[in-house]
Image 1 (cartoon, rainbow, N blue to C red):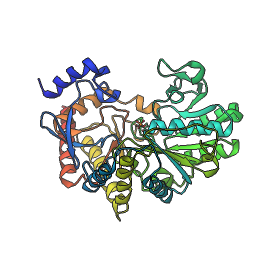
Image 2 (cartoon, rainbow, N blue to C red):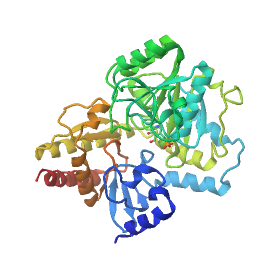
Image 3 (cartoon, protein in one colour):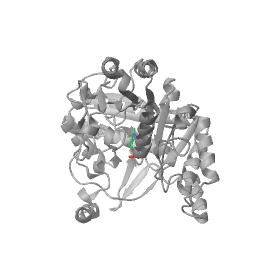
Image 4 (cartoon, helix red, strand yellow):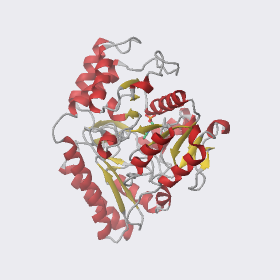
Length: 428
Ligand code: PLP
């Protein structure tokens, strides 16, 4: 029995399902998870001593690879001074100013401890600001595990929300309207019916929680226009896309100005961090300036701020995003070519440092229902073949892949050779 298997068995005794976040349990691919001992650059090392080229990057934060020396040094320096003060610090001011400088739509910024806190707080703010209760989200978009957001649509049509999880009161979920991603008509229908009651639209500007689905031309622009017409707040959830699809996130990449933005992952360089911010006029409604309550004992934690600021400093390197885009395109196109060589239908999406591959004969994947029709059995087999080859992909067909700047020629070539051998076995 491997040490990972032993630890998983042990973990299940004292941690529900053996994990602290469900997707880590490998339920989406079967088998048991590998337990990680350490990470460096593009690699994860498991407790049995095996190395993996990592395409999860802690689910997004590790844009520069693991264990980056400058980030580690910034954390060590901050640790020397103290772990948490529960009082204002200069580094929080510097962080807010830096975020504003990179993302001008964020005129004011509040730091929190996770992406979930960021989206939950942004929605409360949008509701408090507009005095309206309903929100619009999209089927297949994930914004964390707050009650309003754990709601799915009934079979693709616009429905009044049904809770996605026991424990979310139906009375609460009914305020969440679920529309179809990349289908503006479904959002227009929601506004036609409930326009005066809708506080906000929250959207992943590139969907990364139903595999990887970029917005079709006109979709984000259409959401912006609908919000303007109906006095609703547009929230771009850039927890995943922020500083990844471009330095200015998806809002810079697609030229869309949101009212509010939520951030997480890269902004903390791997420390528990999130942020939300936007128009000053809206942000002024947050306590203590305004009546909408939001708070956090550890918010703006000095260690997390030091890690995040060091990361944002490093993002200034010229050519960084061009290199990330080029590396990610090599993986995406390489997967497609390797699959084609063995007669396997594979569709590919890629935006900046995010990519997705779909076992589907449909040439382009733009909607959630297409993702659900993919060949999940093929995905599971491919997943385990790649894991054996030392390539660590997201253990679910509904997750995007992430590259880092630490992925060099050696890692990319290893990955593509492994993919070719795995597709050959799938075909055989
Ligand atoms: N929003 C998006 C787009 C995400 O991808 C995630 C997590 O993956 C979240 C919000 C929630 O972030 P967290 O897991 O830090 O609570």
